[in-house]
Image 1 (tube, rainbow, N blue to C red):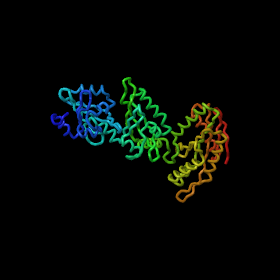
Image 2 (cartoon, rainbow, N blue to C red):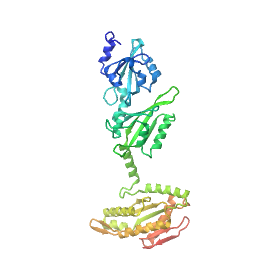
Image 3 (cartoon, rainbow, N blue to C red):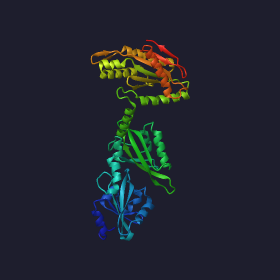
Length: 429
């Protein structure tokens, strides 16, 4: 286009937004300075790539179809595309196409990249995703294995501009948490192979600081060859660490006793049901449950007040932690009642744990607000037996043993017999 004879040259040069003049096949005939800068166009127009090469997800045939669909009255049509620049990552973009000269030429304007505050409403979904949520963008070329990352994605991972960062799929997989790697790889491959409409996965990735952050990765195939084989995948990455932290905190609150920090009744019963199911599968791997009740706790509350009673309960919970192994689970079942689950433990070993706990509590009084409060505990034991219908049946046997310990004088450990019996053994102090 000769600027001296074609007034369109002066028009597009005056436009403040990136603008191109296209041929019907998508070849770029002219570009104003903002468009040259945006698309990295240099030299003469004949050396420029066709627009379809910069919008690989559309493909040449799709772009020609879009141009052919432009109304004859010059009214523009808009399309959301992923713009791929040489040497840069891929970015979402909105292109506006309008017919000129009866269809011999077309005007194409580019909505600015998300985050610079310009553009019409068609680009808002991308802005909310990439700017408002702080997403980064990635672009994976399956032919070369190269994965390109926008600056925002690198910042999510803790890398500043200019920091070395290998742009390859192997490097990205190396950053994934080992426990998440198989699941993420499977989800990505399933989408690439056509098994899902899009790829979505939450996983942990190593931050440059050395720690792990939670991210949400999303993407989809944006380019295929003539036979439908995928060539490129593009997507976004969001830092969701804060949300995952909140979810973990909610789960912790739902499964933890607020006063002691031990497991609550709900969590304990769930773990016990799982353990009983395991014992039914493997009867040669026994497990034992302990039911515990503080002796004369009502008199402690009546004599010293409920704040002292709370201090006693917290004190006993700490002693329970010191006696149990890491594999065991201690819980507060409610009020002054505690429980413990001892997996992979024979009955005699569990009896030894219970006696050690009983002696520890008896010999470690509570010191609270200048006063000393002695505490003892009664404990009932029951093995998780494959003949137990459910975990409630095991707990009933442990409760029976606990009641016998209290009935025989308290500060005792009593052992329940197997299902169908009422034999109880007592271990005096």
